[in-house]
Image (tube, rainbow, N blue to C red):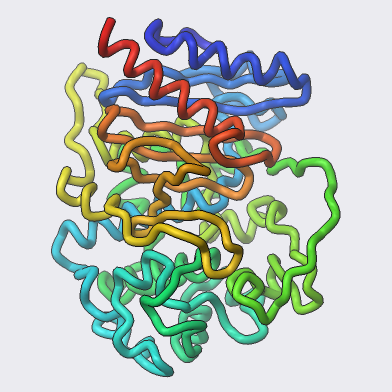
Length: 399
């Protein structure tokens, strides 16, 4: 643990209890409030030596402290969405234009009128490709995009939605490539990560590898059958991982533990971060961050752009798995089953329980990363911490 802003002591105490209740628990929590880092904590075995601002994780230190990096899975989509938001803000991307206006090859096989808004809010029906993506395509979105462009949609675009777990990253990356001539990862590095000191990588440099800690798996559970030809199987079918043709899920949680995946930083699920990096990403985007001289940087996204991206596009039952979900433009939105903020909130959760978001109504940016994959949602650790942070802000406002 580290020193905590007194207004957020209750949050720190809740976080510390996770370690007291489970001796094997390790995790990171960071929160910005009005651009200032007010919580930066690590809990778990051997975390203390490197917990807190300015501490370093040495190459031989296995501790999961605040400086350690690990896979954050679909939190990567949130980083990609901020790049998309910048293109919208710059007037380079019109959400109501067709995808084919930027990517002509996509406009075939029933996708001619699919809009960017539909594609980036899980309504396009471009869940995947017949037989799944190969391992090579999985880590090269240009190859994957060529196959996805030729594929007919799984439903008439706009009549339903389902989480495009793999393909929404491919869609984002190809749109950025067509508009800018550069990869999404390059734009993210130059416009977002490097200038704002964000410890969240879409493409982990070799120099940062000593800080990487493998994602740990939960206790083994029976593997469910997933029909590879159904909606859910189509969305996650890949010979490079995920659901295979035998109907058994591939091991998603091993994904970022591959150096090849980390080096590329695929926008669907290949990002690497710590909690501080997640929180700083969303603080930089929404409020700006307090600098060493006491001033605050301008936010990456204007209030208008934040509203455009955060506005609910879909809410209801996912066509594939029947779960209650809501999405803005790429970003996850709260539901009664996964409540994490106001109507203005925007962010994304990862398959291991990692979570990052900004809630401009509260002035907060939140980052949470567990060492071991865990339950998600309102009742999971990330949901309980999110609620505690919001309660602390409300209490501070009336104090």
